[in-house]
Length: 145
Ligand code: CA2
Image (cartoon, rainbow, N blue to C red; front, side):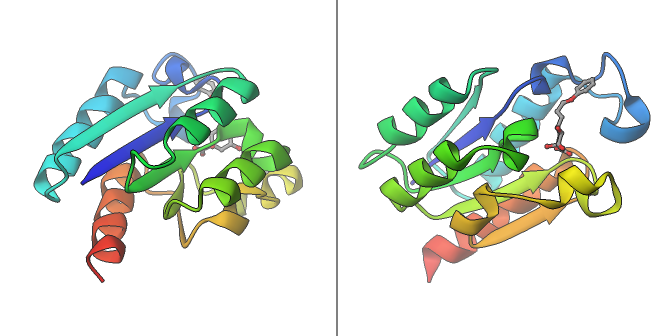
């Protein structure tokens, strides 16, 4: 079983600013959490990808078709704007979990909209970086059924 974790714009800047919202750990720690949690859940491989570019994220989702069993995605700011990422997730129809580090539901109005959520079977918010481990657990449970 292979899982793909996709992170959107600015998540590579984690730990540099806004620790009150996103915590003090950096992006390398996020990658480590995903790889450790993936192994603990029995995934053979967990690829962790980050891009600041919408089209690169769409390309990555398309490339996953036929190669990846499940996706964990934090589209970051593109969560609230990108029909292209939603359409790519729908096109490949790979089981997907949406994850947000912060509790987006308690933040600004513009963060209340999620396009990607419409193609995901679960959403995790407000659990910090451990939300990625939770997402991989939900993905493994879903794939086992
Ligand atoms: O809570 C999340 O995981 C978000 O997806 C993070 C995005 C934000 O636009 C979403 O509304 C919620 C932001 C990603 C990274 O932003 C940083 C900002 C300052 C310093 C470091 C990262």
